[in-house]
Each structure stands twice: as C-alpha cells, then as structure tokens.
Image 1 (spheres, rainbow, N blue to C red):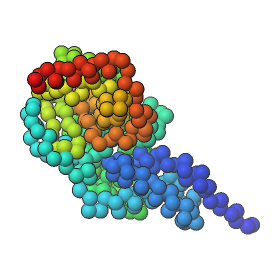
Image 2: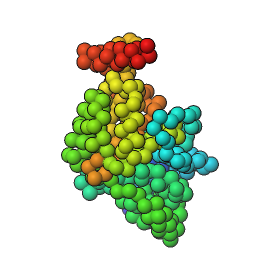
Image 3: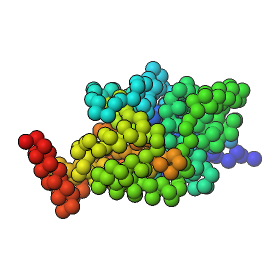
Image 4: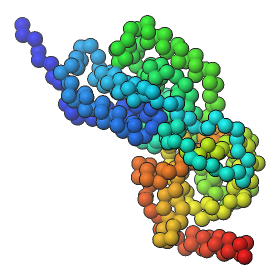
Length: 341
C-alpha cells in the first residue's frame, strides 16, 4: 500500500504562531526591537526549511519554538543582562538625573496585546505574571538555555519531551535545566503583585490619573505603597519611599499640564503620558507601567524615549490641547514667570 504524501504546513499556519512566538521571544530577550527581529527570522527560516518539519515527530508549535530558541540564543550570546533598576543606591529628592545609560542595559515595555494570548483563566494568570517586569528582570539572571527551558515548561506548558525536542537536548538535560532555573528564581524572591486582572487595578489607575492630572499631592500620596519605588530608564536615577516620591511630585511643575491615557502593559496597568508642545497639541512623552501591591502603587516605571511606540499600545500620536489643558498650561507659565521675576 502506497504511503500517504505528507502535507506541509502553509504560510498561514506559520503566521498563526507569530503571536505566541512574540510573547516567547520577548520573555527571552526583554527588548521590543530584538523580539520583532527574532520572530520575523523564525518565520522566514521555518518557511525556507518546511521540508525538515515532520509532524510525526513534533507539533508545528514545538518545531517553530525550537527555531525561535536557537535565534534567541544566538542574539543573547555575549549580551549583558538587562535590568529594571540600576544597581546603585536610591537618589534623593531634587537630585540630578545624570547621563542616560546605554539602551541595551534596560528591559523594554510591551503591550499585553502582543505578549498574552491565553483564553483559559488559569493560563491567562500565568502569562500575565510571567510578563511582569519584575519577573523578566529575574529571568535575566538565568543562563539563556535555562531561561528557555523554564519558559517552555512553566509558561507555555510544553511537556518535558517537547522542551527537549525544541532545544535539541536530552530529556535529562531539560529536566536538570528546569530544576536549576526554578532554584535560581526562588532565590531571587520576587515580590508578589496583586492579580493583574482585578477590577481594583482599574479603579486605582483612574484615581492615580485623576490625582496626577490635578497635581493633587495628597491624593497621590494616598495611592502609594510605603516602600514605593519610582524609576525612569534609561537613567540610573530612582527613588524609594512614599515621602520622597510625594516630595518630588510636589516640587516639580514639569508634568503639571501632562495628560495620561490608560493602557495595558506587561501584565499590569499603565498609561501613555502626553506633554504639551509649542504647536498647541499634546505629544507622546513616555510609556509608564504601574506595579500594584496591596491595592496600592508599589513601583512606577517611566520608560523615557518611548514616544514613538505609542501606536503599538493603541494610543494616538497626538492629542488636541483642550481648553482645560490650555488653561492649566497658561497658569503654570504665569507661575513660573512670577517666581522667576
């Protein structure tokens, strides 16, 4: 009896995996641009080598994640560890920002729409937690191959055999790498965050935005955890403590006329921060992520230099400067002029 001819996957089948591959490569690399390059190269290589895919040996997803892993491992060879906070003592209110550090030193934000693709509530919770910036920072302490094993097993629910196939290693080596990765992460002792899907997050975000835009220092302070941290990559500057952060907010007029629009970023809530310009419109300033603990803001990460990425998060590139914002800006300018004189 003649053997049935094997049907190769179509390009549509490869493209259908672009979403999960984006989430996987981002968790591996921590960089948005590198993620896009890795996913694109994965799809291209898979298409070129479709003749090597054998559905009797592995699922298409397993095979393509294997390709993506090899690409990520190549990209990570010799790369330095990306961080969320600089390994320096916290700054003092009023301190200088200093010079920005190299971009490749920092983790970058990504919208949930590109990194979370689960439908089941349990899987959704795992994917949200595994794209937290604090979790990604901890992943950076793992050797790249251990990082891949942990993600495939604990985030993407690959079996031990599938993981070994994807990485082209033995089952024993895959299991050993997973144990070492879990042990390292346990020693990092990640601070737990509140459930990212909670309605409380949206309420907290709405209150935070209202306090920020009104420049209401008291209301803002009430929303901050006692040990809140604020950071602004790519600067090494960061603050720790509710009082210090409230003091900086009270003393600064730089953001008094900014506008904030909510978004979902790295499994949590955040906002796009717009700032008025001389053309009378509000322009993108920064993507900001809020880590939440005990229903209070525990960490604000202001990613400076991300204004060109607003469209990725579903935000407009410009906003009209409404009468209210024009009034507030004029009031601010009068106050600056008066204090200068």
